[in-house]
Image (tube, rainbow, N blue to C red; front, top):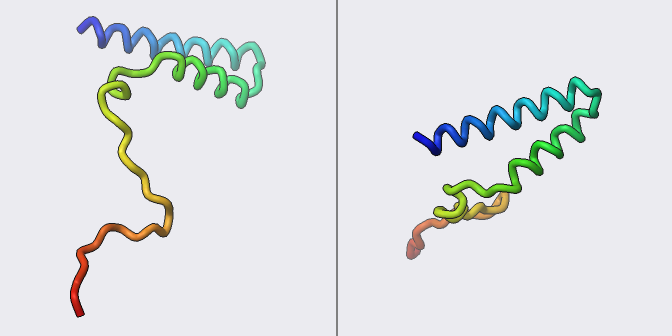
Length: 69
């Protein structure tokens, strides 16, 4: 329960920071960069526990069984 409260507080803080920046007339790109920086400062627990899944490049073949002719 406490963790959910912390996450909600972080979400509300980000929302408020964004709204205040837009209201102050900051360019949207700058607001986006600031908010992304705030999020990346604190890694999530999921990211620490689980490695990211591997990604294949576009056009890279998927693993397929080898068949004999």
